[in-house]
Image (cartoon, rainbow, N blue to C red; front, side):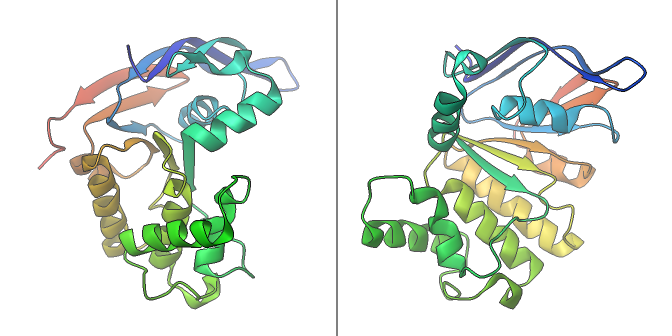
Length: 231
């Protein structure tokens, strides 16, 4: 059984002059521990598919099964609980709270748990050390570089130890060297067993992933598999 099973997913929007089809019947399976990249031109549907994967954007039709749970058969409240338990999200614009320190930003997903504040702080400290920011726990976002802010965002996404990590253009706002460092971090997380699904325009990122799917005009155009990424 695949960790994620997407079955005949269609997404259509009202474009004013009629329906616009963003996704035209996508079937896709993702295995536990996979590092999957989704590529395609702007408007191809890849970010829409990622948001449907993530339980944020209900499809017009079709099913999304994660760990055999039919995500869109859950109520909105159940789906929110499911996201907090199963899924971590990393975005291109980081989305850090500017008046909270690095460790406070990372502690945010733990606020709804029954863990003590001390335990939450220890967990947040642990993941910040894991991403190489153990010496910058009390810095505000504007006191960190872009790459460091992205590391904080990754730490926040994994602090709850979610089975699946989604990343939407995680290196898009970074210079080449910093982007490469972030991709090395994702690869290291994947080697530890983290399932990662990433939307990217960056073909260089393919050397880090296990499989890539190419989406065009809302359809899955082709799939390429790599044993250990591309050399």
